Image (cartoon, rainbow, N blue to C red; front, side, top):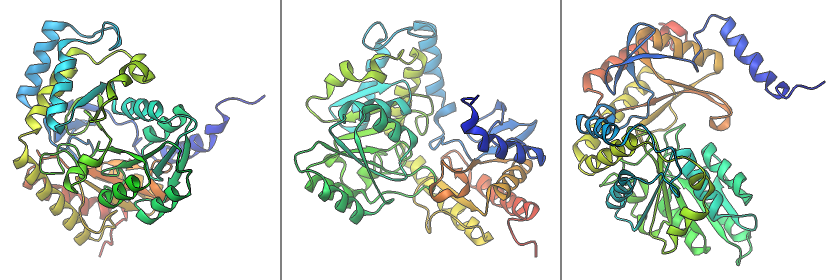
Length: 402
């Protein structure tokens, strides 16, 4: 008789083989104590955090922490209800107002996670007779949003403007069309050519949604993302983002200037049928977002960190996901999963935590170590990281020992 877990057997076997070689489980690390945005205690050792998406280092900001503590005292631990029932507190409205101000847009809708923001908006605005044209390297939450809404999925080659244009031209002119792009792609840390892509999408009569999860707060003059940086933010219909990266807490959102946007609060199932965020969370988010509006010095330092780490790793002989640093993510390409896991563990032993990413999460079936820098990493920490990468590379056989 078949077991519903049989389909996972190849992955179970691969994981068991990896762990039987004595490697620490890379997907089950426990942070015993977190001391700051850049340092934690892991396995009893001081560890530099280089895999947390905490791009602007807001998790320990005193104003952010104080706002959360005050809201917890004033409003309790949770709302126990959906936003359309009893789950809208003053803090939820204040958080949406902060987002509207941050993006200078008319509408903002807060979700309980970034995943739910994509799941909810995409599945609600594109239904079974509509077409979603998306980059093949899109995040899982985007694909799941397509599946939930039962739209026709039309994927195109990663960051290929010509391929996008060809796909759009083949679709019925009268059909509803949504082009879904990301500002920064989270595995390799590369950015989308949004300027060209938005132009061809609009020429084909499509609406455009851009997920700026990994660029909000950091990229663009005001930290509004790649769309701002490339001068096309006014041509985009929906921007999706998350609170779990630069904002430093948890939650997701969509901002838009569409005049009918507010109806989504009644028809978007992942919004209507989920409990709203706890008051302490929306208070920390709103405070963080307002501080990010004045984060230009932090943004400048984060760019310095990214350029130094990227240049230093290339100099050591590592293969990276991009020729030049394009974001706060730097991907170090590994030959295979075994070598990747060995390098990951060697780095952990040196006192650096990074993300080990493997198929199917990664593009083209590659194994990589993903580094995400923080504006709170000091220049000295970046140099320390480079020294640890060199030693771990030699210890794991990923770098030439001569």
